[in-house]
Length: 245
Image (cartoon, rainbow, N blue to C red):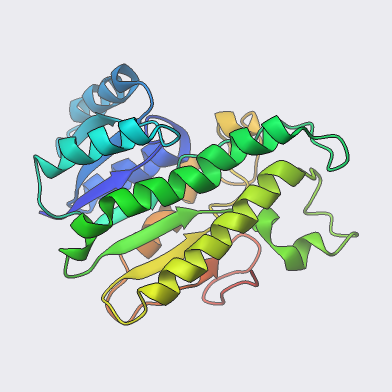
């Protein structure tokens, strides 16, 4: 059975991704900052017939937590097939580039960039043992320099410089990781799930969590001919076209 780790998976988009991967036959590790929250979700899903799931305590901003999660998963499986770096924070809906504090930048980057790099590096050797390793970094169309440079673009009702900068940095990390792994079986991509109705957006948006989850899982299931080093945002750039970084 293939295995997958989804960070920030005890609710919202991450939870839908975990459910969908389990439905596709994966054993899914639900990463959750609070272990009890992850365990509660696992019990709820098992009640629906999905049994191939387990919760793991994982705070992506805490190196000790990352290493403990790695040890927990490695004790159960020597191979990890899929890593979904989903955990992320916005930093709040009121942000101005000319006023945002350094502390706000540090807090958001700690989760959205440093956390992704830390988790990825911690699990890379387990992923290398998979014949078809896949890494999906959850990004956003708001990180697109092309879209953001269009000052008349109505898609950007909210301008969130801290959040957007963090996700733009995540995109660059994704590109470099994909480049370094380009001659291996890895597929490394960034995916925008769309403007999704979750706690993250105050339950506003044009997509449901299930629709967002499907967009992400699609790139976790790529075959050997699938793309790598790409950014997909189907809500703004309908498939099969990739969208500008």
